[in-house]
Structure formats: structure tokens, C-alpha cells
Image 1 (cartoon, rainbow, N blue to C red):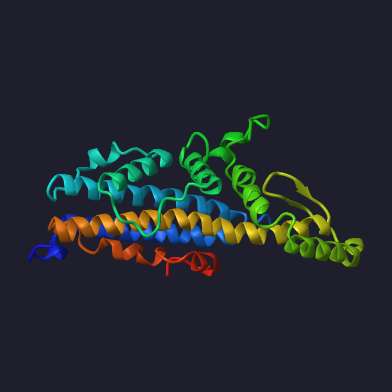
Image 2 (image 1 turned 45 degrees about the horizontal axis):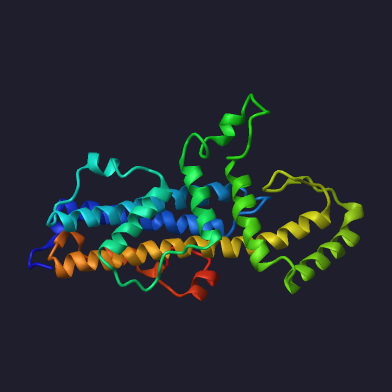
Length: 281
């Protein structure tokens, strides 16, 4: 870093604002993902998808901007250049990985490549595409026969939630406990209760046992869905920190000074990602 004051630079201020925006979007998305359910919190799925898809896109673009600044001796790209980076999350994350390898960054947290992480990116990528995700509900109006393969919540449940349940819930002692409680609730409350809900995959929930079982399963989807999404965010945060520190302290680029601090608290160990419910810190 040089002896100049970066805080007075319009470019530095713009990157600081963008970093704060991305940080909050990611946190809001992760928090909502941990509360979304089929009953009174179905809207939280959409809050999560908006926050995470936009937040991941913007953090990835901050990394691309940092790379551009390093390559150009501190000059940041114009808006038209940033626009060329595109909006496809899968392509943006691949571009970030290319940057990581180009500088041989010594990361503490590598890119997650397991099937659940890949499914999360795929779902968020579809949601970010207005033709497939964000406007899926409006697209079905007036056309009940329209395919719902890109309906965001249904896609999330079939591709992400079921994979989470297969890894962490099905066949476990916890599942047996959830099923036993659901059967008990049905025996006690079933004769005097009426249930009318729709599960994330579109299945009608019309009895207490089925609804109670889905509630118990959803608790695992909430916890691990948030966790696996945050693992992706953690990798991006790690890349951004190491890259901007290199640009600032090795290449003396004031414009990159300190922005990583907004994402520092996403760079924590797995157990904290699993148990912390409200983000950002």
C-alpha cells in the first residue's frame, strides 16, 4: 500500500459500497434460508434466492474487478466492462476459480465441489435467469399446463433438499424420532384437526402426521441448506481477501485496501457455519 489516503478516492468508495451491499445480501439470503418452510415462511425461500443469487454474483464480480485492477496497475474497469462479466453464476464462479489458479492463491477454504454445492449453484443460477426463475409464478398465470421444472422452490426441494435429507436425515435415529412424534400427533390431534398446506414439491399436506414429518425434515434442510450455501460464500470471501491483500500490500494498489473486511466473518470453521442462524455477523 502507498502513502496515499484511499478513503478519499471515488473508486475506493464505490468498491466499499458494493462490498457492503454484497455482504448484506449474502447474509440476508443465508438467514432466510434457515427459516424457510412450507407453511408460514414459504416467502423466505424467495428472499433467500434473491439475496444469495445477487450477493454471490456481486461478490464474484468484485473479485473480477480486483483482478482487473491488479492487471491494470490500479485502474478499475468501467461499467460497460463490468457488464460484460455477465450474470450466469456458474460461469462467474468458474472465472473466479481461474483467477485463483492464475495467482496461485494460498486459500484457507477451497471451492466446494460436492454435489450439494453444485446443485445450490445450479438452482440459484436458474433463479437469477428471469426466463427460468424469478418470474416463474407469473409465467404460470393463465397457463396451468406450463411446466413447473423451473419453479424455484420446487426445484430447490427436488435438487438440494432431497440431497441434504439423503445425506443427513433419511435412515437416521433422528428420522425415526421425527416419524414417531408425527404418528403420536396424528393419534392425538388427527381426529379433531384439519390441515391444508402444500409442500415445497407441490404435494398436498392434508393430515397432521404428514405435515409434522415434513416439519421435522425441513429443520435439517434449513440447517444444512444454509451451511452448504455459506460454504460457497466462504470460498469467495477467502479468494477476495487473499487477492485484494496481494493487490494492496504487494502491488501497492490503494483502491483495494480493506474491502475484504466486510466478508471476514464468513471465513469461519464448519461448525460455526452450521450453528450460527443470523447473518452477517
